[in-house]
Figure 1 (tube, rainbow, N blue to C red):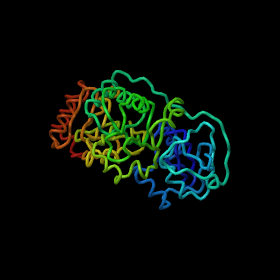
Figure 2: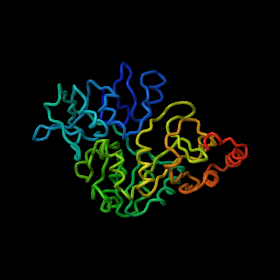
Figure 3: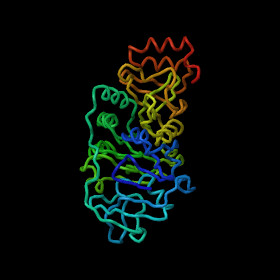
Figure 4: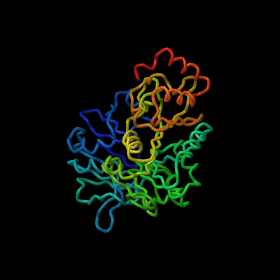
Length: 370
C-alpha cells in the first residue's frame, strides 16, 4: 500500500500487481482506462473491516508523517483518514518524515520504532486552493444554504461547489462539522465564529474530519484550529453518525433519476469517481440526523442530468435522499410517492429538458427504476 497523505486522491492498496482506487479523483478515469488501477465498490465505512480481514492486502505501507514530537511520535498530519485504520494491519511501514507536514490532533501518533525505515524530506504538501465558483454553482449553493439551520452539523466535500456553499453560510450561527475532509472554507468559518460546534452531541466544540485538502495557509494554520483528525472507523462509523441528530449531509451527484436514485460514479460510460462516504453520510443524515441533500447541475452541455433512468450504477438509493438541489430549485423528496417525486424533480430540471422528461413518464421509460 502506498499512501501519499498530502493528497486526497490516488490513495492505494496493493492487490496483486494492480492498485485499487478507494477514493475518486480527477485522475481515476485516465488511470483506469490505461489499466493502471481498478475500483473497489464499497462504502468508506467498510474499509477498516476490509483491512482487518485482509480483503485489501497491504504488505508494505509508505506514509507521509510529521516530524516526531518530544516523545518520538509522528502525526499522520492532514491525511489520517482510512490510512490510520490500515496501519494496524500493515506488516512493514516506511515513513516519509516531511518537515512541512503539520502535527494534527485526534488520532494516535506513530512511534518512530514502528517504521522499518524512514526518509526525511522538506517538500510542500500538494495544494488545492479554492477555485472560484461559476454562476450555476453559486445558484446551487444559495439553494443548499437555505436548507441549513443554525446549530446543524454539516458534512460536505471539497471543490468549488462545496466552497460556494460555505461562502453562503456566513450569516449562520453555531454550526458544527463532522466530515471526511475539510478545506479552506471550513477554516474561514471557524475563524469567523460561524462554526463553533457548540451544539454537537459529541465532540462538542470540535470540527471532526479525516483529512484536509486546500492551500498552504490551511495546512500551516491547522495546529491552531479546533480540528480533530480521526480515522475512517470513527468519521464514517454508523454508530458515531447516529449520535448527531443535527447532521446535514451535502453531497454531489453526476445524475439523478426521476425516482431520486443517485449516480455519482460514471459519466458517459467512464468511471470518474468512487462511492466514497456519500452513502454513509446520506443514510445517517436521512435516518437519524436532520436531512440528506444531493446537489447537481441540472444539465451538462446538451444533456439533462435528471434522467428517466440512470446511465451508471446507483450510488445512493432513493430512500436515503431527502432533497435534490439544482440551480433551478429544491426538490423535497422525503415522504413523497413516486409520482410526486418525478414531478418535483422535473420542476428543478433544466427548462429545455422538462417536456422530454414528462414524456418519459407517459412512455413508461422509468419503469426499470420504479
